Image (tube, rainbow, N blue to C red; front, side, top):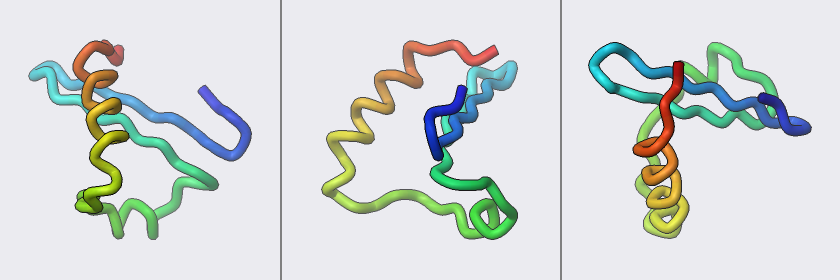
Length: 60
């Protein structure tokens, strides 16, 4: 799924672990190496929406 300059990636393993990644621009090694948690309190409302989406979606 692509939307302009955004690419969406999703995966789910056999244990029910899931990942949802949204990349603006091009995915590269620098982005992957610098990945980390988002701790900005202003992001919390968006994070709650994303949690609901990932809890209810199956990525196969």
